Length: 596
Image (tube, rainbow, N blue to C red; front, side, top):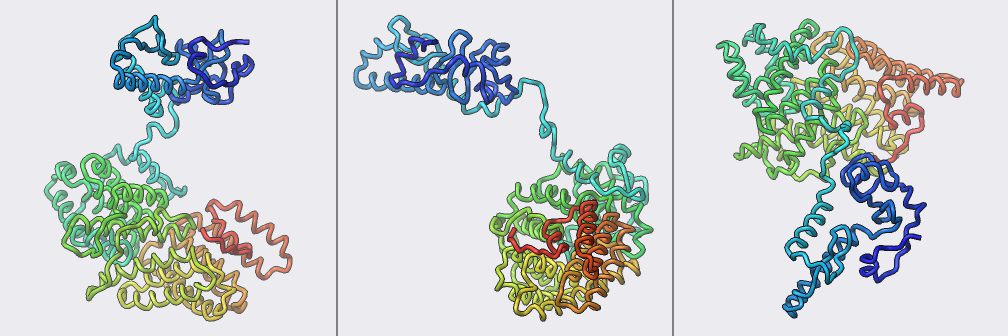
């Protein structure tokens, strides 16, 4: 059996088991050196990497130094501890008896312990430096560069590359598919096309009106000023110069006009131009990364996320929202200490406005997709908008945030809170409607979304007041579906992608409510199927949701329940749209009320 070296035996007064030769020839973890350097280890003693580097191989799991001639060894950590104890001993001796320092010497080899050796007397400075260097290396080893020349997936990914991936990710549709790289290579395509006030003013003001009743991430006056700057740059031919000064203005205006075109009547005729403006905004966005501050980046990401709601070619709304919220949190917008969004502090007011707009986006997108919120309410330190005053815009802003907080609270409801939450949602709608006489559809859309969330995460059918709740809910759903159907037929504006998910959820809920009369239940469900058929011409995943809803309706009226359930499972698995577990429970008639 191999014995410990003499220097180790002098230091170790506590007996420890010796490592056998068999144990030395195999190990379950990477060695100490490979683990610190984050490189692949051969996992044998000594490992190939340590032999190639001509260094000592240290077994991390047992903490022993392995040598080819000696299967046992002293722990590397214990070696450093012993050396530190030796230096402390010398310091104490120097304080008590300065002459004793002259008779004390450290160890001769840095690989072994700091045992006093009368025959070896290196200078004290050298020993202290060696010890400090090795101890510091242990603390900084996690940041050591890789030496195996193999790149992992996260390496080489920049924020811009993630954003490009999110904007190019969309459902396949031959009519609206695009290649972003081609647009970037072509440059600002809108510079070659007329971008004058006469052609864009109406669409831009439509966009501003939409923001007032949805996601006012920036003040209307600031967007108006940005629009004037971009128009002036196009009229004077100074786009390249102004792009370096205000790159965020170009992004916001291009996206604003593109979104406004999609929200305008006969939007189908403007799809091509809206797409080109979107591509131009992507080119300008590269300059925002280089020249602008974090706030400009956040509002540009918010504008991108909003635009993606109305076209499949605008990227993934969910991924863009996550990137925007990441920037928002990194900037600390959720901790902005301002209670009045109309205060005199311009920077705090801007940050608070942008944050609460992203808060609304996070609430509506995550609720519709049944995904966790990017930011929980318990992590928010900034105050919500103040109580509304005389301004209608102040009232709208206050009520939208208030409803978003109520929707988020539905995921944490107890059984006795169902009626209370329903009353709060009804009261919100009554207060919200007068603020938005010109946009009745938006109020019905938000109210229906809140009730959908209540039914998904609450035991409404077991509540004592279920008859009243279901009756009022059916009225709200019917109003929303009628307004949406009228909008689709008249083509007054492009439907949002979240409308597809919300219509599907309404049809599923109404199909599964047993307390509603059979004729009324089927009437609402048939209406949702018709709307999904219409929406499938713009969003191809609406076809899969329509098929699921049709099969769900067949299950309700079919006597052969096992066979229809099997077909329903098959349709759900075949769907290209991911159905959440919460919605699957409602579809299968086995709703769960676990809190998420």
